Length: 305
Image (cartoon, rainbow, N blue to C red; front, side, top):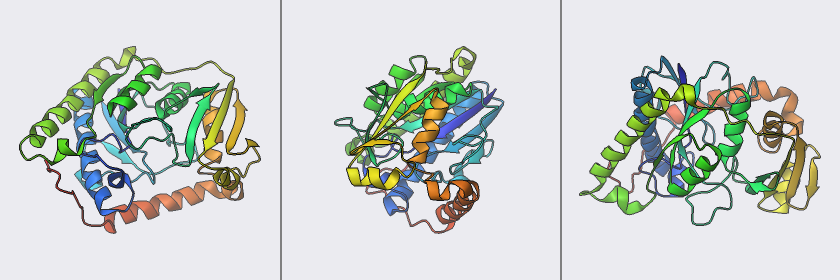
């Protein structure tokens, strides 16, 4: 079984504030340590659960957040974003996706760093229903025949994900500062929660053959509500239907629908024809920057284990 460990960052064990997720900051460098620890535990669990092959797919912001030299050497690492064959690269032989460190949907009250796909959106809906990334990514992967069988993150994010993926195994992660800065209690929480990541990932892989790809019935009416009209004007270079800050389109399936969402974020019309070389170049640049130009980590009194 080929298992893919997809990695966001907001739902990582050890992270409690937004700056720890912001690419290029000293706090983000600490957040990378947190994410890498989580990913390694899930990779270990995947192998213990019976995976023959594990690929790590980094998905947050630039797509280069894990500390690559510290990753489990048995797993292959893929950073950055792609134009073809899918947004996530070549996923044709994935049998199961385990999604680490997810966050809640745009507009979710009292959630940690909520957004859907891109921070410019205040809400994304499919057929009138607000959706989180596990709705979108799960259905996109599902139409490629790949199920999502595991999620980890704060309780709100996990609950939203399980509405779309009720079969998935899950681990809830605290987003409270005190959880990670107590010299007395934090080491035990870190150890227990990451051990739970490993054992739950193993359980998901053991049951992977019973996991179903998420396949929703189209057609879909999709709306992306931008945080302000000026953003909609700036990013809607494709003349999709627009009413103020709301851009909408119809799609027969989620692959088409998600690809059009990416036209509003990663692929403006003026660069579309050269998107592949541009994305290739950006992957090399961000890999180099994240490897050699990253700042010294600022853990902000967090206990590092």
